[in-house]
Amino acid sequence: MTTTTATNELKHEIWQLLREYQQYRSETVRNQLVKLNFGLVRKEAHYWMNQCHESYDDLLQVGCLGLIRAIERFEISKGHAFSSFAMPYIRGEIQHYLRDKGVTVRIPRRYLALQQQAVGVSRSLREKYNRQPTDSELAEALTISTEEWQEIKLAWINRAPLSLDVPIQDGEEGATSLGELVPDPHYRSFQLVQEDQIRLQQALIQLEQRTREVLECVFLQDLTQKQVAEHLGISVVTVSRRVKKGLDLLKQLMCTGED
Image 1 (tube, rainbow, N blue to C red):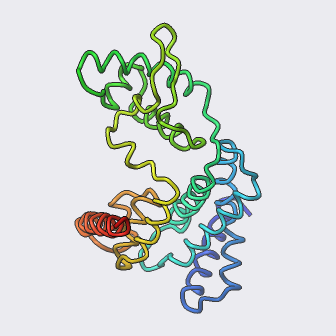
Image 2 (image 1 turned 60 degrees about the horizontal axis):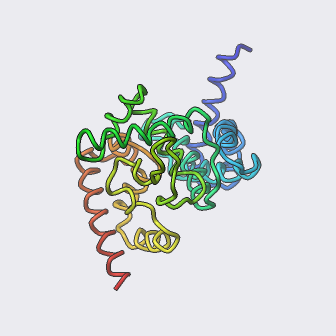
């Protein structure tokens, strides 16, 4: 049997089990689907094992929760490939786990060097433009792509909890703070403390189901609005409206909770 034939037969078996699970919601069938798709979890867990200090077994267990969630939400009628549908759920579950635990993420040495270099570059650009430099301006000055600069920022955000006021040495010119390196002036408002995270979760529960699903897909599963529209079977315009409505309601609910 060729590899292609085996792969096609596996896909067919998974498809048949998904159809059966949607009809009967059998735990036995669901467990079979988890077993057959376990390779997706292993792949994602292996990637994150090299980015953090969590054990491989723990990451596998968390990833399986995401896989189960994908199995329960998958709709055959939408015509999506299950593996493409499941990966954001697996990845999202692991990312949430790492964020909740506040693990220390290993930052590549090259990223550390560029982060240090960005200190002086950021200061020079602020003096030149009399404002905080944008991502593209910083990336161009560092001779890297905007996407890579975003990855460097994300690596800093996801490392162990760190005050944005912590000083970073800048060779001859003294020190600057980590917060000064972040181009987004609203960055601080998104660094939610544990109490804010709890209030956010409580507010999400109060939203209408479809609005909550849209927000979860966009902000928790890292899907584009087009992907969310295809996933939920609604238009991109509707997704955009739901996002705006949901964020407005969350703001109201969380402000009310502070009173």
